[in-house]
Image (cartoon, rainbow, N blue to C red; front, side, top):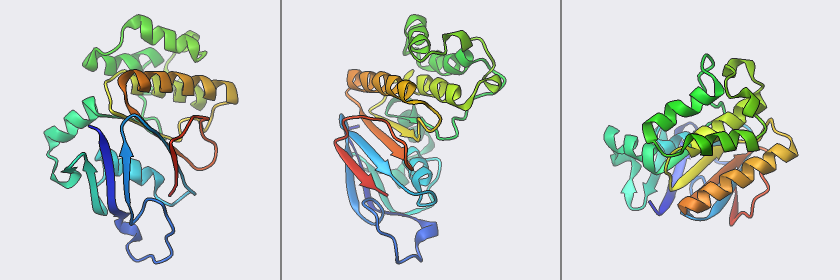
Length: 214
């Protein structure tokens, strides 16, 4: 997949609003593979909804979302499964980790399906992010910032054309934010992938090709 195009897209809950000023809603925007984007938004403007629309978890929007020239409304269940396995990886704002599993198990449960990364590569990421000592700890015992780092590692253990990260560093300090940014960027560049970061304030310091105001 080389491009994601938002064509006059708008959450249906906003259809009656006439005061929306956005670089994305009700416009035509193309996000290209290999480039890095920041989407800034205030709370309640539809940032997480946009992520859900792109990944196909919600379809309550007007307009179109195109993957290359394929309309997302036309995708079948098997198409969405393939898209999530090979083309778009999402780091959820709410993380969606399994609290009863360890940090490593949360990553391995996905890597066991993709067989994309070696144990050595995964362990190196845990070490770089300062949570190697938490690999065998249940996620429920970790801080939210530590869980964010686990969720990021999980997002990277698959092939993708686009990495979509919804507020990935909201609970991280500057040093850990930069380390996460470096790891994320290196892996995306290795895959020739695009990066889409959303933020309601604090965001990664990256060489963004374009910043949108949602």
